[in-house]
Amino acid sequence: MKNFLTMKNIKINTLIFMLIFFTSVDGFSAEGDDSMQGVKIFNYLVLLVLGILLISALVYGVHRDPNNDADTVVAKDSFLKKIMAVLTRSTPISKEQDIMLNHEYDGIKELNNSVPPWLNYIFIGTLVFSIFYLMHFHVLGTGMSQFDEYSQEMNAASMEMELLMKSGAFITEENVTVLDDEESLTSGKERFAKDCSPCHGVNGEGTIGPNLTDDYWIHGGTINDIFRTIKVGVPEKGMVAWGTQLNPKQMQELASYIMTLRGTNPPNGKAPEGELFVPEASGEKKDSKSAGDTTTN
Figure (tube, rainbow, N blue to C red):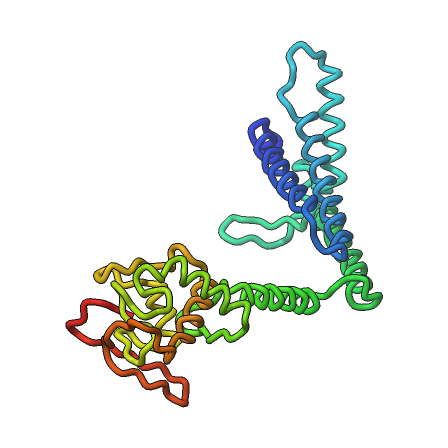
């Protein structure tokens, strides 16, 4: 105990307490579940008591001032000893013979010290806390159990996931589907006229790029294939990767609109390129590639 009350150790323990306290206060001030406020308050009361004990040790356990008279020093020592006696109920060295057990091992003797009161206080505190916890969460039902909190968070996550799915954040070439609503197709048409028509023609008849209205495709004609081609592009043929400029929802709308061009047969259509693509009833995609083609669709 003497070593614990040295100035160095007192400062270290005080700093540790301050770090724990202010870190906890930051979490306490954040928005959270109201049902846990009582538990948090109890925790901070415990921290406050520990802080008072550390500050008391810091005040009364500092280096003795040589300018102080002997009576003041004795008073400080006496006050601190009283505090430590109440908390530890330790036996003075001069009376250790009274509590020494009648056995020893390798010259080591054992003392029958009583349990420190501070440890009993903690034990009693846990019992009081357990009653509060039981009543709060399992009897009165004023707080959510861990299962209820988990269920609530999972429901919130599911709702957030659904919103993100609707926004197109999770659309990939693996799960993309064909859109057939007027709003999406109109948006895709506007995107096509702005970004795609210079190479594929206003009606998809093909200019620099291939004809998008026939049944011949170089990189596949399913919605998955078209979405992937838009996303990663074909740099060696001059087609940029639109995945860096368009979000997944926009690429889905664009791919869906392109699929509506099939069979429209606009005038001045470019000659077929690639391989014949026959849509399968099962919806499985078919990768069709032609080695030696100089343009892509």
